[in-house]
Length: 375
Image (cartoon, rainbow, N blue to C red; front, side, top):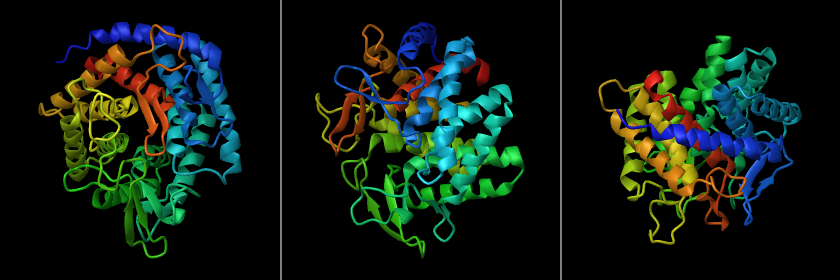
């Protein structure tokens, strides 16, 4: 068993930090920090990041029962109703938005309005499934040159599929599950490379379903290994196996996780892309490390033959290193952890706090603290 005793001090630091920042940020929707360490906020409730701040607060509330956290999280969730009602701007990331908010709240409280929101969001996600290509389209529009957004799918979508599995279990309707499994099979065929690195974007013909090309997306190139994309695959495939118990999903989750672990530097905090020249000044991406850590904890907890220990150990090492070297415990930054990279090719958000990086740090720490009772 790993030594996770450090997580108690880390949790105390976290609660102290968020108790302060939650009173400053309130029910707004943070995105990334600026040069002063202040979070920028989005007014558009349909943006993919809007579920992470309330989701983070629900994780804290689950352990602390502090109404400060739950009241802000519920207020945020209520604001998301506008996007759910308007519909037209919604995209594949409704899983990030309502899995972490409404579904989480429903699991804790059995509130039927939260259940309704989750099911409406799941229905929207299922409607994005392209039946001839067996993929979920990512966006309604995009900035990728000469590509048709109707045929563009991205590795991130794996992380939204748990919303479909939940809806299938909740309603007894297998169609949600069928869509999730079919998309996962497409990921195995077209996104996971022979060396278990990962493509970020794959473009299909939306009318025939044929694969057209691979797009580099937020990686350095079409053959590089974007760290956060790899982390989406680690976590998403682990969650796929959790719901399907398909050995193919387990094997893929382990192989991609093994690739991620092999590519980690000595300090256990990943660089933003594993196939760029890595020097002292090469940016890291703590959000990738924390998302991958969560996936490895899910994966390791399901393996009873001893093979899961290395994934749990790697997750523990990544989370501890992030806490010790990238935590904002003794400064006034709004962010919990720094060292995130949003979009390096575009020169956006380098060495900042990212709200999803903060969320996955809290989730990883939460899972590590409860390791003995949940394994």
